[in-house]
Image 1 (spheres, helix red, strand yellow):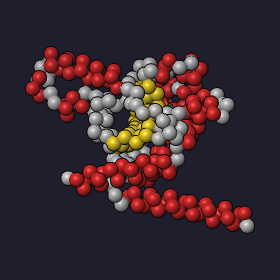
Image 2 (image 1 turned 180 degrees about the vertical axis):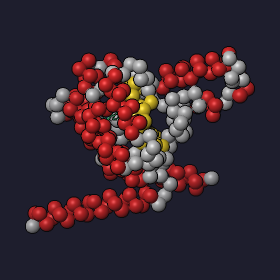
Image 3 (image 1 turned 90 degrees about the vertical axis):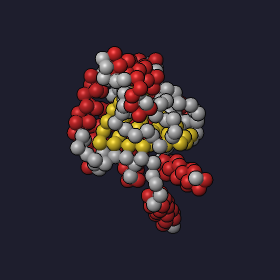
Length: 259
Ligand code: V07
């Protein structure tokens, strides 16, 4: 009886997930979803585990989220994995986090390739350990011809530094005559940012109850929809991503109704 009940419940649950996915696919899906994956340390603390256990659990959620975003037809998924401020954390924690890209790719790269996912990275590469950078560059190379979801990791990324660097490049190009003052507009300025190859995010998700941007894509998020949740990143499930996208679609429809 118990087994039967469980079976029934499982089937029922998974069919609602499938139904939700199908319903979402009938409406416009955000082309670019960006996520601030916060709350890994807190998740671990609640379980009396070391912070690194939370980061490791969070990595598994990256995989699930990527696969669902790909199924939904999201074009770009940008994940804030490590900020320029995160170096202030304890040395052993930083060292552990910097091994996660290798572990993730060692385990999941074949699956990403199978599913036509293209791996990308944005952020300041110079300060990254060589082992981390090598693993990511190898994955970028191996997936560069894939034309499914673009999985873009923001790693050692900071938005103000990105904007300053763009301004410096603009000044250089102005000095050398490549760019005239009257040619500089929002679109041209965007082309100087690290995100030049991507469209602006349509939807920003932040987990773990903090209602702030923390130096993430300040320019690019100017017109994006925001969805915040108290759920900690390791507890973020398919249901949560679907809910965020449902909310996005409802807001779009309302917007469309007024116009
Ligand atoms: C990191 C796990 C997710 C929660 C947030 C912090 C810890 C996957 C990657 C990754 C990065 C590049 C890549 C493949 C995978 C990753 C860092 C941290 C630095 F090509 N998870 N994850 N990178 N966490």
